[in-house]
Amino acid sequence: MSVLRSRGFAALLAPLLLQGGCADLPITPATIRAIEPQRVPQAEQESVIAKWREAVAIANDFLASPWRRSLPAGRFTLDDGDGMAFVTERGTWPIAVRCTAWGDLCVATGFAAQEREWGFVVGETGAERDERVDNSLFRRAEGWGKPPAEVAELILHETAHVVWREGTIGSWNSVAYYLEALFLLRTTDHSAERRPNAVSHEFGWYWQAREQPDFATFAPWQQAIDDHLAREEDDCDHGPFADEPDVSFRE
Image (cartoon, rainbow, N blue to C red; front, side, top):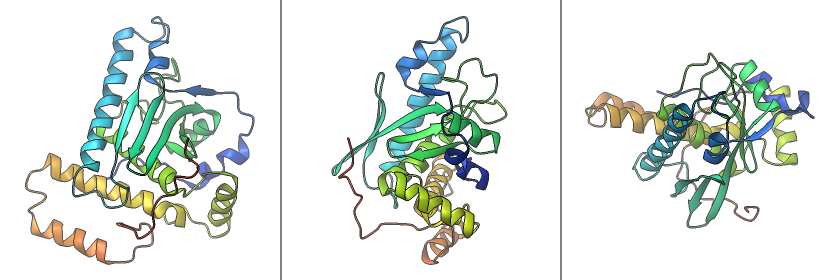
């Protein structure tokens, strides 16, 4: 159902272990097209960008569907130069993607990304010809290309962190996040992961319904989802929520 998540105990330590890391590359359609063709052929560059655009379209279809509960209504945009943004009636959140040393440690320890106030970081994967295409937004750690739906789920999960300011979003939140992870030994059941995990669950249900037409009308599946939503789970917290996302910090 769900695709690779961005959490893990070792990955939580990335900012503490790799401060001062040298890699820091913005990932946008424009920076991908700036790669020298001898490193990554132009046709492959365009294929990666097309997959990203398809992932954004899938994410927007999910956001417009009844499966969305834990993110506010909105849609993603993908600009050639500025990259992604999440646009809602309350405001616009930049969802920038950067390939950094922090992201490299996430990949090395088996995870995909880590949230930041302005978006999220990813790390090198696969052939490592150029980090702007061989990174964990587009590829799994083993180097295999991710399908667009897997890219979409990662974008949605990390966007939930940014919108709800949960996780390593700002200095104080980061300290609290690491303290809870270290002293309470929490990873996927971390209190700051519950809303992002709920978004990942909801996207998984949406994707099943989209790919399997009988999913949405199959009573046992629907009962299992209803039971899940009715319970207070340790690893997720589904909306809709009474509180509104804080837009005061947005650019």
